Image 1 (cartoon, rainbow, N blue to C red):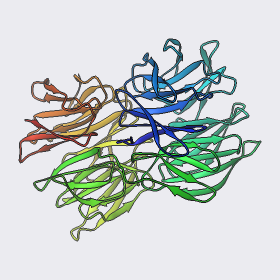
Image 2 (cartoon, rainbow, N blue to C red; image 1 turned 120 degrees about the vertical axis):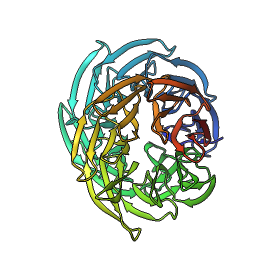
Image 3 (tube, rainbow, N blue to C red; image 1 turned 135 degrees about the vertical axis):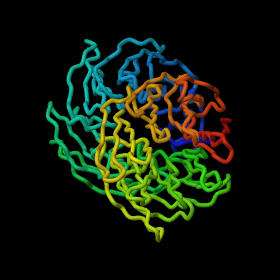
Image 4 (cartoon, rainbow, N blue to C red; image 1 turned 180 degrees about the horizontal axis):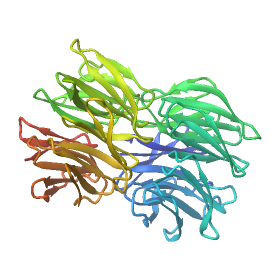
Length: 559
């Protein structure tokens, strides 16, 4: 029994380790033997799991809009907490184990009893809520958000007790030490120590901090970042943070999941079938890399062949492996005779040869081909909001032309026509840049109601974009239009037919919906898989769309 998708969270309690993953599973493991003991299921991706302090229960949080309480050691389902209206990102037991607090992308914090009844709802964050904890006496909850604030909530009065502004910078992870100080990790790679209403910043990483874990017994803080390093910090009684050591993360490690084990060990999430263990005193890793998820993250048609890449970092040509990159990859970008890819390690690869062409300080997410002064260029979007622009030289070399800091959050997708580069951001912002001089043409803040996931070109008349808000938006010459999609889950991807007349959208729920640009009507809707649709491309030779899924399947959609 192992995972088949990336492990999003690791939790530990005495003799147990629990993992949640993007294969919809929660698995309980024996911490000594590393053997799987039991499995629980959500109806969608599982984002988080945590133990009750007495070790009787486990709670998990999923993208099926629910949290679930499981009885140990058999993971018998005790209750479903289902009042949220969007993905639940975290769920944690109160110190007395009588309640569960949850936070979600619907921007609400909720408190439930162990029977699944919602007792309190806290509203106030203006962005998705990512992280949550109880204070030491259980009288307050603390949450962090993409809105750049950390907020404390009074559980008894049901109101916001305080709000700390971290300069508007997205904050994914928070912990609390034994003195009640809050330590937050933000998207600028900073540690923010909040003590008695005062905030002190410490530069810690070159990219966003995605996970903090703290052990009060050892006075030890650990931070994991998208710069692919893990740092160990000593917390002094006065709140000073002193770096003790730093280590590079192996390619298989996902920097959003970690937990302390007994002794000098950490359990960490991976892109493989089980968790990894790191001993920081011996600087030694225990990693089982034999099982890596086979999910496809990107599909393209290039020079008459179908190429795919995914969690395993294996580039396939017509389903035959041609390059093993050793890194989860997020996109494939055809550019004249070449094919590029990149992902978690921040490396830009030649997808055909496996050669590393460029190293960035944060993961790479997307790319587009465009032309400037008649010369081919590619624009690559990063998790830290920079657009990397490269020229493709006639001798097949690659030259970095510009690094444009467009957004403060991840660039989710880029598209181009003969005049403009169009990009969408996780913050829901969008922007247009001139292809010739890369100047900003226009930008719209909060263009979508939620995270913008993908965009595409529509011939030379404009662009289309999709989002977690389940809407299709058209950005055409002189026109902006919004169309509700038939999808019931976040819309992950979009592609356009060769003639620009048909758009196909895919969701995390495994559904595909076709849209006729001329009539502005939805023309088709089907669900080829229960797994999410990760990527769509148009196959000109077959006159059809190809949709890739996180289950590793490719699905043909007639056009």
